[in-house]
Image 1 (cartoon, rainbow, N blue to C red):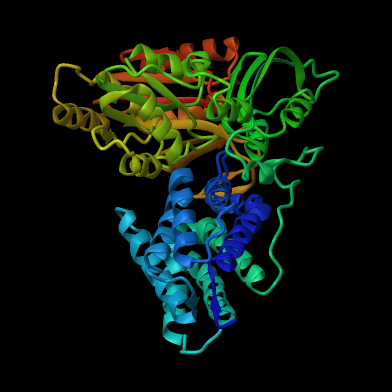
Image 2 (image 1 turned 120 degrees about the vertical axis):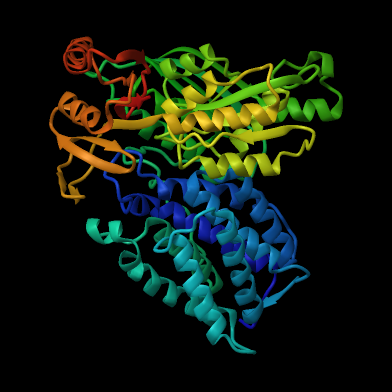
Length: 554
């Protein structure tokens, strides 16, 4: 095919999203660290899903209009660093198509070159051996070999062939990949995207395999249909988990991932044996049937948002009759507001106690999107908003939200907190009487005085930095380095503390996770007191999943 129009490009991009969706668990498996939050594939998948949703019903024949809408969807739905970088690649791709209703192979190549330029600029310190390398080398190879009159099919094949070669070279550029024996996960995800585009261009568009989302998916997911509609049903329920004798074991991450595949605007909160869920979906019955495998409902509320919207448009429903969820009375802007990312009710409460106005659910097990941050910024209704991402993989999404917020009168400042302890320290240093500039400087400066670490469990065997890790070991991690691996979580914690604490430290903050029982906690307190009795130690019941202990040292 010598040229393609907007509808062909649309089919290619939707096929790309579907292909990544079908393969994202394979991409997740390539994450270097053997921890349960290896989610590069999931982040890229959710980012692409947001883009495909944006173009699903667009009838434009113009390539630039389709690419523009797709880019907008990616920008708003971008999750994690891999998702943000992917969104920037396609943002540049759209910019490179300016004025193009139809594109040929050379146009395609030029657009990819622009994608490389924009994505590299978006990363403060680009690292080679990553998705950036793969897209750069493959785009340059195509630019060097594309010719006038070449088919777009041939061009994308040239790009893909070199991308695969580049991916295979990533371990030579990034030693940690070579040590663990994997290729770069983001680069692998990028190849799945362009494989989907090539298949569609050759007449074989990829459909979603709805069984991909979870290992125990007994029904046909409605995720693809959800992309076609803006409203649907607001579904809320409270459920009691168990008993295990008659119900399936409840895994919060798997449960959350499944609901994300068949709905949106998702909030899942677990409190001991109770789960509270809010989700928007076209098929509430599917949601309820799935959830009931793990427990019994205590309360259910379902509202038809599509009908409410239609009634409002036709005048059958008056504004004064609309529920508070649909319309809020305009009120003056507050001077300041703080937004923090958190993953655990105890951590949520601590941030609220420190003056945080809005909690964005996420962190290690589910990265929030740029759109999640935009929604939170609108909700706090303040002149100056400080965002505490509390995770290095969320910084770029938070920064992207600050860029795309439509109300330019709102000043959004992202404090680059990479851990929960850093976020708590930054929040403690906020002063409502100081200027935005002084607060930013003080809060950011406070991050330097905090050392962070965590204890979690391994999901596979590996060896890193001379530490042999077996599946289900408790591993201690500090500064992106595995300190030790042990069958005992307390042993790993003590090894972590020993590696982090020196004579200059005065405070240990220990945030305790869901899997630590009272007996274990008492043992921890006794041993810490025996070894570090001269330091102040604060214990917080964070109730976070996945991480047994989160440690802050000051």
